[in-house]
Length: 476
Image 1 (cartoon, one colour):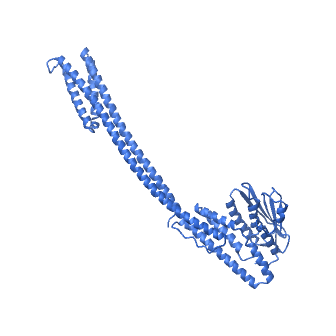
Image 2 (cartoon, helix red, strand yellow):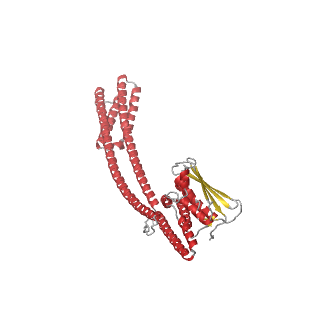
Image 3 (tube, helix red, strand yellow):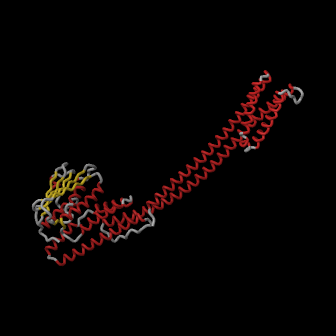
């Protein structure tokens, strides 16, 4: 099996390596071209130095001929050696062009011939029998040498230009090929990424549809099909399993309720039927939002949070649908903690929920209706703090008294006026949570003093519950 996250990361790594490799090769070509161009320019400068040294040697020889001073002849000799040394050091560079090697050979041969004539002239050994003719011939050869050296310089400059043109052509050819390869790789990578995105998006659409159907209690919707990616399959398997578990739990509770109706007395059956009806009034939006949040955490590869959310949600659903009219207060508080955890994940920094439990009289087991505090908290979130964007606060205080537990749920929301307060406990749209809690508590304890509300516009709402230690109906 494959992992979507790994494949996406691999694609981005391939792109990064591709561009890095291309940049390194470009840099390598640039460096070589720059280095080679530097060598050519250095050789060009050396030829110029040789020409300058040759002109200096010619000047020294003329001064010697005029003054017959050996110092000038010594200067000539040094400059001549400098010229030959500079030119011989470039002999390998001149071999790259037939023209430069030709001018190099002519120039060096004429330099040697001219130097031989100058040595004979200085030692008064005239090959022609006339020193004046020898001097004229030396002067004429000097002009030829100067001309050939300048021709050598021009030919080498042409060689530099040709070499730069070749390098530029090679570089442009390489750049074109590299760009074509990069475009081809990017095109292939883009196609691969698009295919992965389409597969993932299709599964997300299927999951969203299944979630919506579950929120409508339509459990006949088909399971989400698996993919080739293990990380997406984890979410799919979790969603399908949750759907089947919820369906099974609902079927079990409905079947058991039917058996209870058939075997118990009519009055008790009516009371229990009403009790269960009120208990099952769970907000489907809360369930849908919770499942959507689980999807987001699975998509972001936050496995620990996803597992915690699935466990807490399953715990809430299992206990809200379980076949019992009462649970212990400790179990109720555990369910409340699960609900608070999920709500805090949904609400983020918008609303804070604080739970404060104070016991005083030992370990007496107290029975309460399942999910009796949670609807009060949910009502505060959905109505009292509906328009709050930050700084919202819900405080839940559970304090043990001698005969009962006093539960106070307060918020710092918009509050209610007298008319809204009078209507709050009626079973109507928007306040079914309060009505359900009120009626279930009265059915269980057979008392009127089970719930009280306090509220003022702009000053929040406080809901007070009394969870008695003695119940009228039998405990499980």
